[in-house]
Amino acid sequence: MAVTVRIPTTLRPMSGGAKQVEVAAGPLRDVIAALDATHAGFAERLLDDEGGLRKFVNIFVDDDDVRYLDGLDTAVEDGITVSIIPAVAGG
View 1: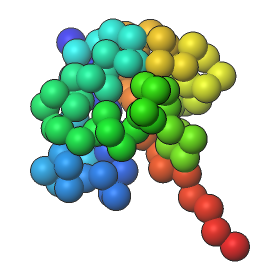
View 2 (view 1 turned 90 degrees about the vertical axis):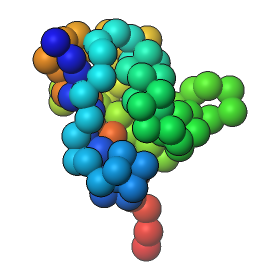
View 3 (view 1 turned 135 degrees about the horizontal axis):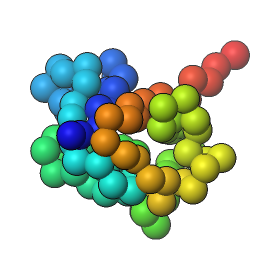
């Protein structure tokens, strides 16, 4: 089986317009690497220069924010949905 990654509208040009992409299960860092391998540019948009999650990107494994789990080491098992949610700011 695989993991489903939900792609936000702002990043869909990198996924060829796909709303969802399936990649192999594993730690979140490997899920992002697999996503980037099939759709180049995702790692650069999601990760900072040190390889950590960018401040203004939220990633949820099922309904849980990975910042409150194990971050990029969060286990993502087969059949799980990963949602990428860009932070919204404004005034």
